[in-house]
Every structure is written in C-alpha cells, then in structure tokens.
Length: 356
Image (tube, rainbow, N blue to C red):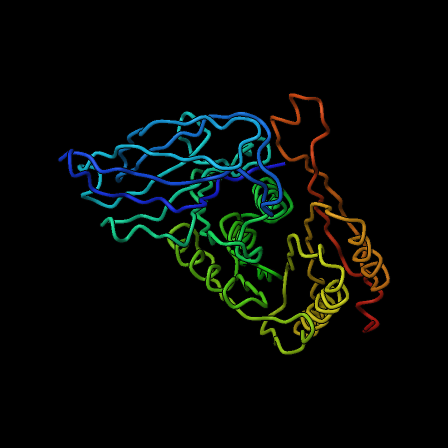
C-alpha cells in the first residue's frame, strides 16, 4: 500500500537567540496509510529541505525505523532562505524530486510539503500540500487537511486513478471539443483536477461535505495556471440527486473510493442513473456518459455496488487492476494491494427505451 508522510505537529520555525544567521525548524510527523490506520512497517530516511524560488537547500535527514509511530525533526534553517517566499519539503526521495503521477513511477511513500510562506507567522498549521509531476512536466498540487477528516484527505484509489488517467489512451486527448466531466465525492478534487490536466474539460466537482468543497475550490484555483479546463464546485447529496440540474450532456461521471460505505451505495447508484438520464435528455442521440469508478476493496460489502449497477443495466466495459507500489511488501514477498478501476456504460436498449 502507499504510505503518506503526515504532520502530527505542523512545522514551526523560531528565531534563534544565540545564532543570528539561522532559525530552528521543528515538527512531529508520521508515515501512515491513507486512512491513518497503520504505520509504515519498514525503515526509510526522511529528508528535509527548504525551497526558495528555484533554489533548494537540504536541511538534513532522520531515519524512520520499523515499529515507529512518530518522528521528531529539528533542523537549522538559513535566515537568507526565509527572506523570500519559501516552502518546506519532507520526503523519502533523496533526490528531492516531486512525486510522479504515473502508474509505473508512483512512490511508495508520498511526500509532504508546506504551503509557501513569506513570513514565519504565515506558516500554515492546518494543511499539507501534495505535489505531483504529470508526464508532460506540469505539477498538480493538492492541499489536504492535517486533521482526521477522511473527506478532506487524498486516498489511494484517487491517487492511482489520477495516475492511470495520465496514460489512458481512450480519453480523447487533443479533441477539439472539451469534455464535460462530473466527479462524485470529489473530496480534495484529486481525480477531477487530474482529468482537467490530462484533457481540456468542463469540470463539475461535487460533494456533500461543504468543507471538502472548500479544499476542492482551493486546489482548483491553484491549478488554473496549469490547465485550460474550467471548473465549478457544487454541493450534491446523493439522497436528493434531482436537485442538481445539468445544462449540457456529460461525457464522463467519475467516482473514486465512494463505495466503502454500504449504506450509501443505493443512493450512489440512483444518483448515477439520474445523471445519465438527465444527460441523455439534453441532446438527442448523444452517447451515454461513461462512468469511471475506482476502489481499493476494504470489505466484502462493496460487492453490493456492482450488483446494483447490474440491476440498473450498466455493463462493466473495462476492469483494470493496478497493483499499488509497496517496497516493503515486495521485499518480504507479500502480495501487493490492488486498486480496481471500472468503466461502466448503460445498455443502449435501456437508454433508448427510457429505462428508469
């Protein structure tokens, strides 16, 4: 499984009373899973650096050992690096490279960045930034909450689906007309914004959690200089899907890690069906939107989603299994965990007959 460097105590920088050319950086961090339910069981070096514009300065490293749950880092920071906009990086990549958003290059441990700051008092204590390099060299930045909310963190299934989209040859990259893409349960917006970098899109990012939408908006704004896609964030409760009115047909409906809660699965499938019916009714003869779903199976009750999709006349056109990089599991001979990606399409006869 992928692991994540997370801040337990946000980075703090204090001026040294004894040293007039350095400040002291301190933080507590951990290396854990997307849900924070297990710690990294191997050993790894965590490197700390400060970036100032295009200049990087290594501040040292600490060693994460098997059995650890928390790591304390303290380092001296040259004051010269704090006079312009700067940001800190904590990574297990000794080359300090931005994490690659490509299936074959996904990191075992995802790095943690701070927001940029120009004054010590501006160092944000509430958020962590994940930075990913896409194949054409551009960067996708996703800001997530430091707290315990699952809705405002990135998940393995979202990271893997975002990386898979970068190599997806059927996404029509380069076509003249932008896609219209709606994401259900967008959270921080990782997958939708990755789609927006991959192809020009009109993105509709939806979630029931207002705070999650705040993060999605923030991440979309920071992506505006990276892509040509336009975006909108909208609240959507799956128990009331009819409240969302589409103004144009959809090309894709995407959902990542949305079937882990069996109680919400019936509403999710009804919402997908409602969106497909609306989309089909907006332009006669237009193909039904494809539905792309990713999940890392967490319990057997998720099977209810696939049963309901079949009952609602959706076919799984494709099923792709993507092993998650995990150097530790590989070294001890354990099977890698897998993210499953499904592409569903509505039966053509069901669409034409107005099946409900």
